[in-house]
Image (tube, rainbow, N blue to C red; front, side):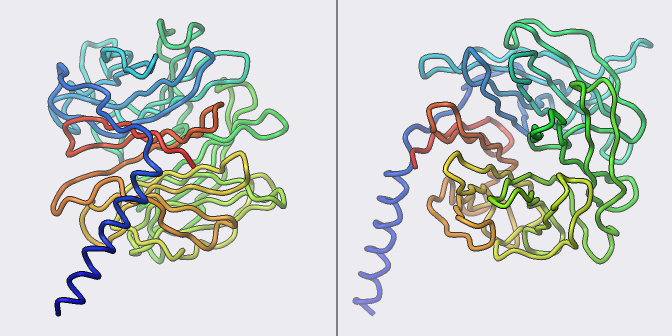
Length: 332
């Protein structure tokens, strides 16, 4: 019994040391804010540095929920400012949801987001910034059945098409892909990629495979992160299949690194939203945990976003107990 206890202690210390080697910086984006609740952060690198956005208000679904924005400069985040909300021309206000930031190379920064009373009724919208988020254009409403990237970042394809991983919740949970070749002015989309019954899935992330194929990984109600591949740049996809990664019906995010490896941030459990883990893979199939960002019983650590910046650092943000947005920098 004593030997087993000693082994567990040493194992726990080894895990903590491994995490310490990976985590270069971990801090909240803000300590206090004019909103008590927040969720669904997004990250992007612009010419002037890392930017983040999320939705915040009294609580999810409340009409006062808006999209908030902050910039990371010299190791510190700026005071959050609201950059979008759901106020209509009639004066009625709806909640906003799931912002996604994307920097068009050499062009504008785009903010995609959703507006509406609930996910089965919301519609897509976007705003544009020509000064790295200091000022924003008027809201543009997306066409019917186009939502933009639903939670996770788009992928810019070689031909200049922006591939937006998306999903809908109005007729069960179903994935689809959306495409725009002109920065969000005109759109097309695929049909649903799953039936929402046999497999129930939303919020995909896109990975790039070395053979030119694309891979999606996504949240599901089927106990595991699901995956699929495309050999035609996102137009058609293989049937969804489970990965080895657990999923308690909670949002994930993933990114392909410059060296070809893949990183995924996910809740390594079938129930609840703790722990929050980082796993790495060389092929998108075999995953190995390399860090545990949070591991508090009954805590909520969810809806991660992950990017790799130009200096090769990995930046992660996530919801911390619905009260704050936490930012972590990993060195790999």
